[in-house]
Length: 202
Image 1 (cartoon, one colour):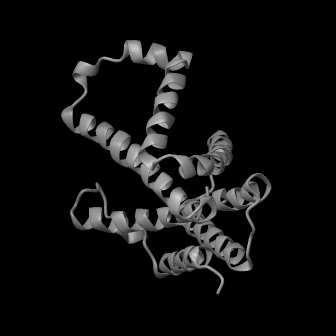
Image 2 (spheres, one colour):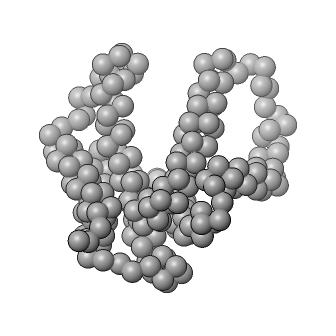
């Protein structure tokens, strides 16, 4: 996922004819290095995750293309309008996916606990709808290159919420013990990358 902004810069150069300045390029590379080091420092390699990695690469390229193609729409429409239509078409295509229909028909919704229902609502509204809405807002005012760079803040937020959840005893074990000074240095590298990619040349 750390390569998403790099793919966006390349696609924006060829599709939108966007110019790439050296500050943006350095910022994206610094952010990518920080995100990759932070991720590699957080887990051990597992060969069984190959197919998952392949799907993530496909997702990264698809999301980069989405950011590029959505940018022209932001000139004509409001972010809420674009997101509403994106989710409408998304729902239509999901309903056409055969394996999903079988799972939906066989699911007993009455046995799902309320706390799980709350989590599902949070994922749909908070993690998905609001995230895409804010991304569209960013596209309207910043453009695809800078907007995509903020994906580097994601691992930083994971560490931030890990500390909060560990403090509130919402985790089964003290997850905050995995947070080290080295990871904070990687976080600073990410923030520097986001700053450089978002700052304009004087």
